[in-house]
Structures are given as C-alpha cells and as structure tokens.
Image 1 (tube, helix red, strand yellow):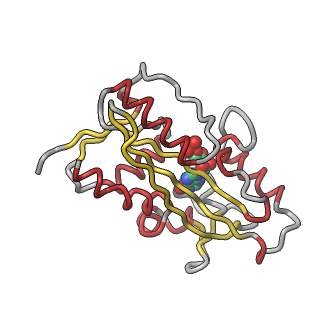
Image 2 (image 1 turned 45 degrees about the vertical axis):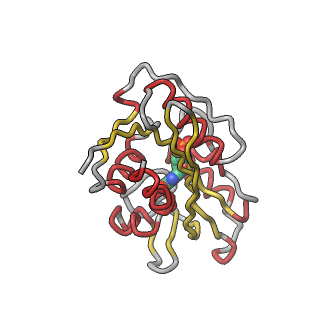
Amino acid sequence: MKIRELVVATKNKKKMQEIRDLLKGNGIKLYSLADFPDAPNVREDGKTFKENAAKKAVRIAKFTRKLTLGEDSGLEVKALNGAPGIYSSRFSGWPKDDQRNNRKLLRKLKDVVRSSRGAAYKSAVALADINGLIKVVEGACSGIIGDAPKGTCGFGYDPLFIIPKYKKTFAQLGEKIKHTMSHRAKALDKIKKTLIDL
Ligand code: IMP
C-alpha cells in the first residue's frame, strides 16, 4: 500500500487523537501542527464551519507544501438559536476553557426543559494542497444537552452531550461508541475516498 502524508491543521490534542483513530488503517502518515512549530496562526474568522475548515487547510497546505486537512467543529443548541456554533471553543472567552464553556452553557439553559434541549455537533472537514482547496464536507450528530456534566471521556461539551439512543453522554460512552456516530466520523467518512484516491 502506498503511504500518503497528511498534515492535520490542528493544535487540539484530543481532536487530533480522534482524527488519528478515525483515519487508522488507510495507509496515511499523519502530522499535526505540533510537527510544524513555525506554522502561521490561522484566524478563524469565517462565518461557517466550512469556511473556517477551508481556511485552515489552504493556509497550512501553502506553508507545509503537503496535503492538508482542516477541521472546524462546534455545538449548535436549538434553544440558543444555534449558539455557540462557530464560537464553541471560545464560548466563555479567552483562554479557551472546556469546563467554563460547559458551565456557561448550563447557565444559559437553566430554565429550558429537557424536551427543548436539542442540539447538534457539526464538523466541517476540508482538504487542500499547495494549489488550493480540493474539497469540503460536513457531518452532524444530534443529541440533547443534559443538566449536569457526566463522564470523563472525550473533550469539550462531551460531558453534557447526551445521545438519546443510549441515554448517556459522549463522555460516558467513550471513544469507541463516539466514533460510530460522531459528526467528525461522518465528515471524515465523506472525505476518505477523495483522500485515498488522490
Ligand atoms: P475548533 O478547534 O475551533 O474546531 O473548536 C471546536 C470546539 O467545538 C471545541 O473546542 C469544543 O468546544 C467543540 N467541539 C467540537 N467537536 C467536539 C466534540 O467532538 N466533542 C466536544 N466538543 C466538541
């Protein structure tokens, strides 16, 4: 099998580990931004997950001159009109802090009943090379926001994100189950063929 090289334009170690797990077994040697300490900081100033994912992929591909995958993701809560959305990682300000973000989300939903706490994780994945953008796709996963954090796996909003089928949060269910249904797994699945055929 021909080994391909792919840079993942992220510094988020947990996200990187998920992408590693999800792309395992396809003959792809993965690098993250930890392997390129001089890579430019890409400002996430797009209006959509897709715009941000594409921006990360194109900028980092230009810098590394390698095939690059950009991923931008977040949580959209119906009762909050889609917030925190593209602002998910910095919902409660800087520096980014998952626990503080979760506390803010719980505060905002404190008067919202369980039946109105629907939400979706979204993940946009973009592929680019030195010549520019190749493809952008999106995956989504539906859930319900719980009223207290539960579980220790995953990252971000996982302790609050309940999968109705299991009545448990992603943080309780663990990576194996998360990878069968997550927004990131669905987006990567859509781009895998392009990645392998290139
Ligand atoms: P990004 O690094 O700008 O794409 O930010 C993604 C943010 O969205 C994370 O910091 C989390 O707050 C949230 N998020 C995205 N995907 C997940 C997930 O799989 N689990 C939990 N939180 C997630």
